[in-house]
Amino acid sequence: MPATATDPKDQPKGGQATGAAGAGQSTAKEGLQDVIAGRTAICHVFGGDKEKNYPGRLIYRGYDIDDLAQHATFEEVVHLLWHDDLPTRSQLDQVKQQLGQNRALPSEVIDLMRRFPKDATPMDVIRSVVSTLGLFDPEGAVDTTEANHNKALRLTAQMPTIVTTWHRLRQGKDPIQAKPSQSTAEAFLYMLNGEEPTDVAERTLDVALILHADHEFNASTFAARVTAATLSDMHSAVTSAVGALIGPLHGGANEGVIHMLQEIGEPEKVEPFILDKLKGRGARIMGFGHRVYRGTDPRAQYLREMSRQLGERQKDLKFWTMSRNIEEIMWREKTIHANVDFYSASTYWALGLPTDLFTPIFAVSRIAGWTAHILEQYSDNRIIRPLAEYAGPWQRSYVPIEQREQTAQEGKKS
Ligand code: SDX
Image (cartoon, rainbow, N blue to C red; front, side, top):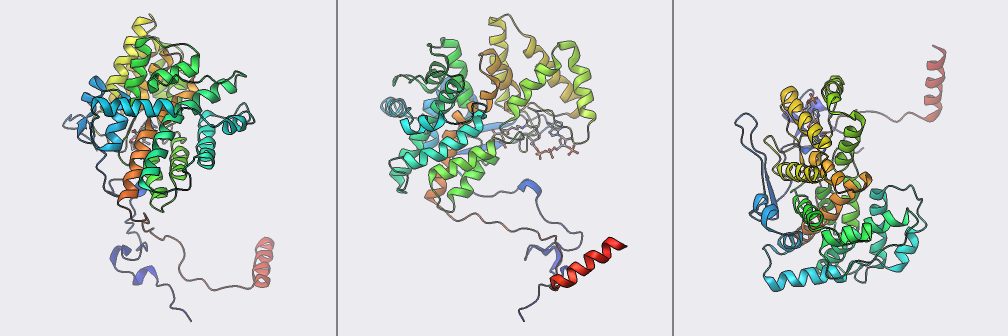
């Protein structure tokens, strides 16, 4: 007779050793809150402090997001995340050329996309196409460091093409090929709209891509690392990340913000709407709060300013004004700051982007961070396998089905 499972009462205090829940002594960290689940040299999020009014901070490989948002391009940040430092001029030219040359999707994949249901959401299409690209990637089955870097580059180059190709196919239009010399931001807007973007539109999107490129062990990145840690392939790990990003508590928030602004409709309706929303148990206003930032999300300030500037240029500051009002109410009522998603909504709206492409743009940027973390995981790997705190019954004996059936029948009669 195998050793029987021990009863929680016999467990060492707290049950940590075996993951058993000692009676009333839960040690599980729900949502892994405050758990340091691994090491990375790619990115760090400094949470800041609400009471002391310390702002949040974000660094990519030691460079502050403030410097990168003001002075860098997305392609410089892609190189930084992958190769641990900002590129020289020749390295930057090389990464731009490589991205530009690898934007196309295999014709077989486009043919497959033509068969997708026209109402498929862009995020579901990204999830499906990333997985399919693994079948057509020339190094799909190769797991050398060089092959994985090549796959990271191809996926980063192809992500904007997946989004814009789908947007055009679902409208019955043919896809547009990017020009190899175009930056990621420029290529995205060109493939989407069929015309060269203005400098303001390109730089606005470029900064947004910088701001979203990485964020330490956020849900989608951690999902990618868990998959990569089994030594699964790059495309499988990115598919895991995309699936996590689809969730409204993570990537889907910016679409939720624009829908909220549209539902509110007018500035004078903001206060009653938000106060009413907050009455709901467990209510969550999209675009606010963060697991790590207790101070401000350092990315939000840039998106807030870009939203304002675009609104001013277009003489339409309605959504920006409503957003500022919501921010004030959320601070007054909940002392909670806006996160990166809150103002990306009105910024992308002002760029004229379709609202269901807001989260896909997050993926167009975060693919750089996801692939950097996957490469890092491969470089110094241990499978990621935490314990669970067991909260189920311990000692149950098998009951033959005849007896179970009889018990059930008796239960029905009583
Ligand atoms: C991103 O991790 C990352 O780095 C993610 C990200 C990245 O770059 O990858 O930064 C991108 O995902 C930003 C977050 C986008 N999601 C949203 O905006 C959705 C709305 N936000 C919340 O669902 C929430 O704030 C989370 C999911 C972001 C954080 O969740 P936590 O850490 O589990 O916090 P919680 O839900 O337990 O809230 C703690 C308290 C709550 O108290 P209770 O009601 O449970 O007693 O804070 C309050 C709430 O009162 N609160 C909110 C709120 N978020 C937290 N109240 C109203 N609205 C909110 N949005």
